[in-house]
Image (cartoon, rainbow, N blue to C red; front, side, top):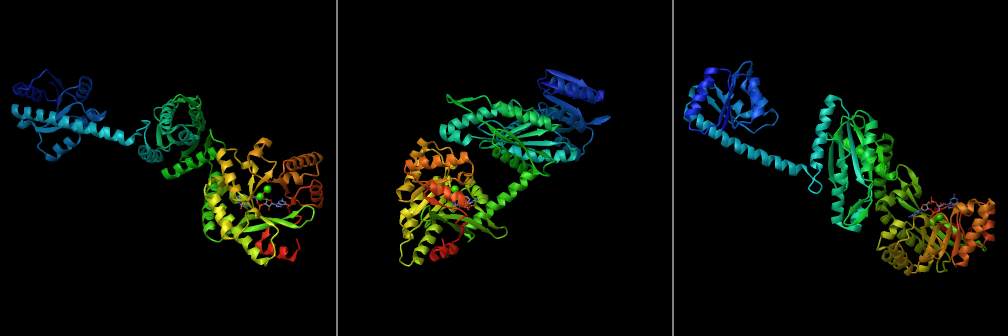
Length: 569
Ligand code: C2E
Ligand code: CA
Ligand code: CA
């Protein structure tokens, strides 16, 4: 056993050594130090089994020395305090500061000292075990088991701590949120195990560019956060973010497959962007969302303007949810005329939102928002149902005479993911007793996916007997071969062609489009007709139907019914 005695009193040291020798402990080495500095140095250099530490070593006191010895989290040695005082509070303070026992010098006998040393050693070893298991538990609690990075729990604590510290020091704290761009797809295609391996590889790569002092955490799923302390300039943050994106550039080999992964990073700084942890997190999230919106694989810094836009957009999304349940959505109707007879042959239903504060909102403003969430599914179904109900009311209004116009409803490409849509449509047709061939579904060309599932869905819609119409034809990329895979029977020529038909080149193009469409047996509709000249030109091309402001704007159901029944359209 190696022992160090720290005591400024030479007589006390000698007496301690004598008692130790009488104690039958197996002693290998006894060192002595007569000053605090010497003692602390000796303890740090040699690593003793036991230190006997006098409480009174002017100018220090024993607790200060104790703290100094334990300072660097060194718990390797058991420490017994020796003192002339029998103050119990003092003894307790020593134990609290990290000593294992406290013995009064006047009580020291060989057996008392031996017992103190043995008990101290035992207690010390137990404390050590507790400390180790505590450390282990902490490690488990703070680590993400998949990647070994720090986890969300650690991150939340670290962020709060950092903000408290930095609010005092005035230093800058940078929060980067990183979200993988295409992880879900990879997970779906290659499976969860491959997804896990990929996350491990990414965690490994992300560790390279960041400094030791910064904290890289996995927040869950494919989301990571990096807390960057005291980076003085934004330029450095930019360099770091670029290095992070670069670290992912090299393709990864996962289960023998080459996988390319990119990420979007949102950056927010404290105290510039926010005053607390929740606020900072929100800002970084907003910035990350913006990075995704701008095309992914990029770094975006938080901007207040964008935040405002997002808040009002979120508000709109929230209001839209209410609008579907309340009676705020309505359909307007725009007539379509036969090109030559100029008789009413169709009507297109166009949605409007009567917002309680903002008045009428046009579909271009809220359909894209609905398309980003699942709201479009509900809205789409609402439109089909409302259009069918309206049509059946017109059948009633016709009082037995045959209705000679069809009704067209717009579908969003995202509705093709609504697998029960054909069934829903069929039920509506049945419920309102509407012949399927009087209903047309319009799908915008540019949003159409050439996927098997989309084609299947269109076929199943077409199987209900309704007609399918390709909207805004000419603005998308449908090649001719591509077009023939879809069950469309009507092409709606985009209004941009009609409206630029003053230009000779455009006229040639429109002529070619019509010739092509007719030769393949498609029915054609020209929309956006505003002038007599445009009308005449479309007539000369034998377009089947005409639609546009020249004949009527989209109008409420009652207004449409009036002009139809009065024959003024
Ligand atoms: P769209 O299907 O191409 O509808 C034609 C748009 O052109 C309508 O705008 C209509 O009011 C407008 N329009 C009609 N004639 C003329 C004209 O002579 N000149 C000009 N400049 N414009 C004309 P609206 O009603 O604002 O609808 C915009 C788009 O919103 C629609 O384009 C359609 O893509 C979408 N939309 C409308 N209703 C629905 C719906 O119920 N469901 C879905 N998914 N989308 C809808
Ligand atoms: Ca349309
Ligand atoms: Ca259109």
